[in-house]
Image (cartoon, one colour):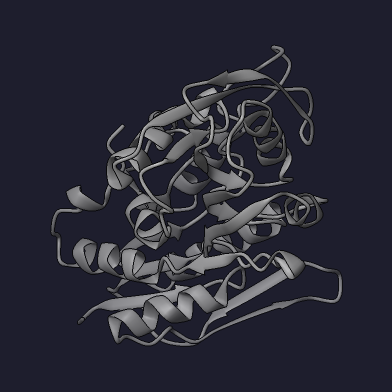
Length: 311
């Protein structure tokens, strides 16, 4: 793949290495360190002049650190003569801050989009953003890939009595995409968020009685949404074994403890972020083939239509 350079930050070296293996193309050498005062320092150790650069870096926690490192790497490439810069961000932080709730808040998603544009990127590749509508906040092209086919294929559907469950209204379209892949009906949990870690549930719409729920979401952060959904499903008469699938498994705070205490048959997430799952033993589905194929097509100026989210 002439003129292609793959470069990885420090957020998820395992995934970056897997993408490089899929492409049969090595990662470029780089240095990432800190000065004694804590400031970041990065340096590209190979020539990138005239190259098509793909910077692989999820903005996972600590998001601010990894975002800044991504911008520093981009600036180093741009000043070294790179022809085109693509940010490959399997997980994009601040995607949930897409509007103001009280009137005195920032629109964090727009700020991140503006930072990436100012950083000299020509396009962004993301996977299962919190909302497909986020494309509207980007002034540069956004390639919004989906991991739903990969996760749906990995789910061991227990039989025709299963049901795909959206844990809140925001995940309804995502649940419908899973349902089409798995040929299952859809149910919806009505949730209200109280705080960043606490939610309440008002009920379940759809037939879940004696069915095995397949609860799907774009991300698992604290586990509060999944915990509340499981409680509501059990109260509605569902089977007491469930499957949970999400693209991004952040597992922050009490998430692992919360999920480990639930009657879950299996938890599936991708390797979009390098989070620890400990006692939960979640099964990871790699994004490497999806990202590698997207990079291959972008480099060759070919269509990504069948890889993208179509809301």
